Image: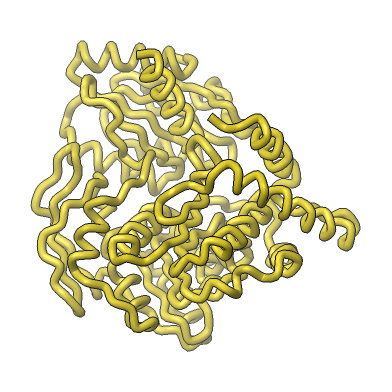
Length: 440
């Protein structure tokens, strides 16, 4: 439970959401300068962008580096339950007391900046990114794994100077900010590529590959395709994870247990390993096969095809865009074949809702449309328009009621419960699960 003192601080922090999203690096750079440029003292950074998969790749990178004995900083978004989750050192969330102190410090600098810029306010993400850099400096981390928030070129994290850049995947999302074509989105993601700095890429559409290639050529940055550098084969998958064999052009890692579900995680693992091999080569660091095996075997990344109950099988997934909906559908088909799916769905208003519905291709026996505690939550009645197009049977419910009814029907019909559409929904389900466990 968070202290009353931190609650007051967090209220100030969350008020920054009112200033919306502002692209550009000037404000972040100015804020960091007022903090003494902590980002410049972080000498080993892996910067990760991508439409989907970037969080999973970051979690894998962090876990493997910790297994290799390095002190890691990990910056990701969004959080599921507590904002502390976004900022971790050696796998541990930033403590409440340190978060409160740093909010005070960054708040003073943000106020100074607003006065100097005719009231231009620092946004929530700019504020938290600067705070994270300062925390990682204080903690003297060996390596920082840094996830972009949105896009790349004008994302607040792009003030960093990494040794390796990573682009996991590219598809249409946040079109209001990133553009309405794959080429435009790829151009924004490619903005994280730095001069003479290698970039590792996942499986990208041809249109995106061409944009990335041109940018890399202009920056004299070597492009490494993960699917050409690393070969991963699945031996087995069950609800506890996957057994995979991994080989790269540099090493043979043998058989590894990966506790994350879905074929897409094999591609993410290939990206992570390719990125780490290159990062260690550039920095003359050691990366033993045992560290890779141990790190992947212990990776945890909540809200990604996560099984939270076995009776009935209940899965929570943060899929919220068309590409992720397709990945989720493919994973459910692989794991559960033709078993009926009882879907709990809530989404944000800035998402491609028709595209998401279009790419859900598993048999939905019933869908519960829900809202969650966020100003961007779509009213269930709006989601109902797309459910009708799909000819789903559906009902509108509060999240606790939806979970209860979906669980009852899944038990009765030998089906599975799946909650998807937003990380906000995932977070509220985790909170409910925690409360029910506390009640015994």
